[in-house]
Length: 275
Image (cartoon, rainbow, N blue to C red; front, side, top):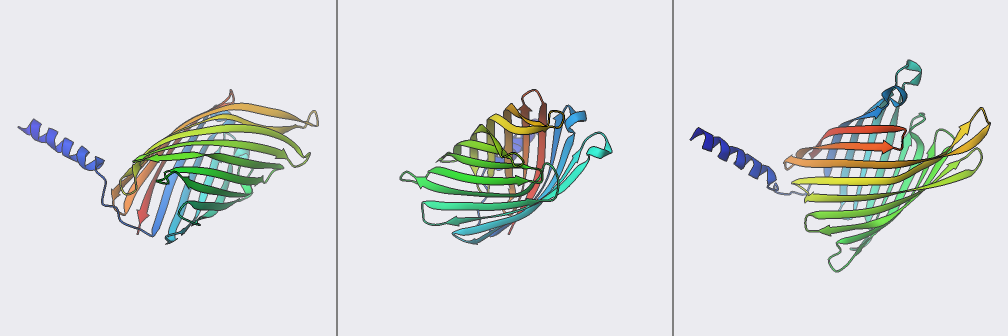
């Protein structure tokens, strides 16, 4: 009898976890998270720690914005290679009609080699089909680093919503520029993701990202630039869960392999509040 009672209790708890909570309309959300990235070989690339805080505001039914900051700390063996910095960011989303909306965001990093001095992103999104469940996206980004590198990124793709499923296919074309010489090199990546869930209950996303990374590296011994082109493969699992209508948690696990240079393991955990 006790065994049956325990079994029924476990089934009841699982059943409750799988049920969506009653969805309410919240105008504000605050998120805080910690991310740890382990790069192998660690003696060369180190491990990375970051803390993020982001505030989201639904100002009207057709306009929302967000503001936030991420505190980065990169640790490599040897004190001369320790780096830390802060990335400040913000963005807006505007609905222009029932079928067209746009996103714009900007970020600014403190002086650090791996943070952008500034970055601007913009995209247009068009809802297609009778039920507006197919979204076509065209986006552009410009990145200027504290070093002499610049990136221009075009992205385009589709997202299909079918009941609680979301399928996304996105392509990225990157142009990396060495500002000292005005030489350029191109690379491209492709992203495919599958999501399942709904607001107020849970979201789970499995994301595949693969392609190439390329940049122009200066060789002081040869006093010249040489091209670096690397294959990149990445997989990420993300989950967001509402514990109550106005509170929940989210987490991510990821793995990335950059050619023969390194492997990266990612873990993220965060909490969010809504009101």
